[in-house]
Length: 263
Image 1 (cartoon, rainbow, N blue to C red):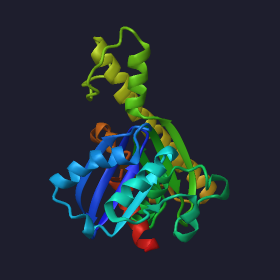
Image 2: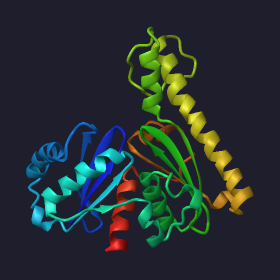
Image 3: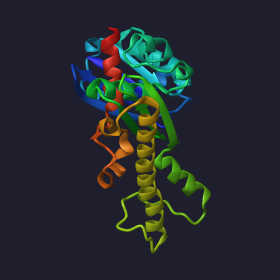
Image 4: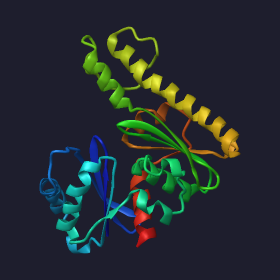
């Protein structure tokens, strides 16, 4: 079995694979102040409740956009199977089939690389991956398997939290899809501005990226596959036709693919 840790700015998602099947997933909050032992103490009861035998975990793989948590999760891995985990970072990109421009090797987030690798490996076509997390990131891959570029905007929840924290008269509200853009009260007005506003952002940016990929990479816009991933994609997927595919676990499958390629 393979155990994966995808460490983001807000949450740490872990998943246990048996073959190509995800058996379990867990999510805990990211906290730079926690030690490796503290993280293991949080994870251990989750693993125990799932009746996981640590001796069956052959590989632990780690991706993080929070460098300060690399050390703590090396300790977590040692507790689990007494081995160093596979760390996804710029040093391994040259061993993988997806090419990163030299200028971006040390800048692209490992989560975005995993997204792009999995999408390219699945569809063998130029693609744009929209990853809905703390940031809303769009990663473009050309028809030759090169990362063509990235666009980054504040995530949906990040934008809402900023509005809520900085506007005294904006209440905490559920970010549901409104029936109309014409808000007659504060709740619907904010839902319209955030949810429908981000619908417009996503559709506009995907269309612009397709045009730029045609111009700069020679891709045909009709060939470009658009894949949505990340937990918050469900907020927009029902109201847009921008996505050809939706897979909230794309990053995890990309990490699993890397583990298999390097083993």
